[in-house]
Length: 239
DNA sequence: AATCATAACAACCGCAAGGAT
DNA sequence: GATCCTTGCGGTTGTTATGAT
Image (cartoon, rainbow, N blue to C red):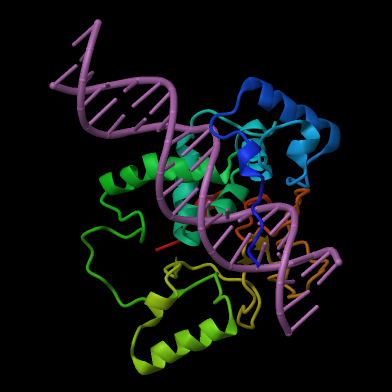
């Protein structure tokens, strides 16, 4: 039994949104709020699939979007966060109020990549392009998906088939920040779009710790402490 | 003015995670 | 525990705008 399609493709519009569609979507969400994207199109009288509605709202119609050009400071923030988080656009977007993951991803690909290249920096590794490869230790915030994958990775290392950098390539650890806990962090920061809710400080699911917790209404943890008033991201010292 | 190349960005697609049953 | 459904993410594509020739 196959997976059912996300929508009935024969009766859905595709491509650019019209003003009328935008208005309908805005009006519906204003009246009923976000959520249940699958049933929203029908309820709102839109011939679109739920996914499309969600994307349009999140990337374009949301009232809190900043729009407009990125400032020089935002550029540097994106570069900094990308060096820490890699292509985790949603995590980066979460730290740039008013910006969406799609917007940042596009901006990265069209502007920042070139900007870094012109500075002689590899946009993937954030290292000087001409710098010879160094022996570095890498870690990843993305855990292996399954025990089996972990075992396979372990097997590859043991058998000399691969090295850790190939298996866990997501994050270069040439930085000097670390979570305050003493024990190794084993829980993933995020699993498939869901933010892990284990506190880095006290390691409890529903902690009362306020050190790393964001004050924003959407929850989440301010690992880099930007929301908590440490606005000078330059203090996140990196090599 | 016409044509082509490139940039910018909106939108789509496939996939995976987690919840519900 | 297995299966299905919904949502969200990241990569990619398509379309439009802009600049160069």
